[in-house]
Amino acid sequence: MLRFDPFRDLDRLTEQMLGVPAGSARAPRFMPMDLYRSGDHYVLHADLPGVDPGSVDVNVDNGNLTVRAERSGRTEESVEWITSERFTGTYMRQLALGDGIDTERIHATYNNGVLTVTIPVAEKAQPRRISIDVSDDRAGELESGESAGELASSPDSA
Image 1 (tube, one colour):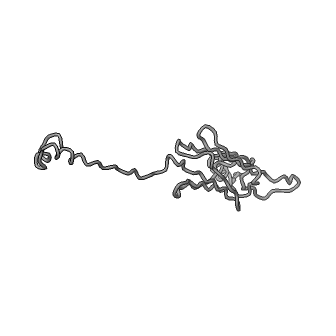
Image 2 (cartoon, rainbow, N blue to C red; image 1 turned 90 degrees about the horizontal axis):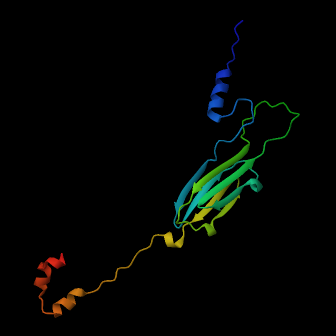
């Protein structure tokens, strides 16, 4: 009798993609996020569906922003699971912030399974226009007896 398991290849593929053996507890691989700049601040949106807001931790240390969250598994042991595809465990992402960030004013909100972290750009790092003071040095040279034509052709004026 030939034993054929049509799900064996699927289990092997699942293990390769998720990094966990089929039938074991599912572990999260990453925290999907978007990051963009809007004016004088950056905005990070991280998807954390089903995560208890009390388990979310956002901190800044040594120029790195770290986001951690934990999604607990269901504890019904007396049930017979038909399928269990939702990830459980700890999520973590780290971002290097750089020098131009005002780390004292970073704030975060959590709404409908989405963590939003607002990261302000430090005022000293924001682009600004520099005014140029114009001095009229030619007027002083003309008073010393040179003509305007001599100034235009002198090698020092190039």
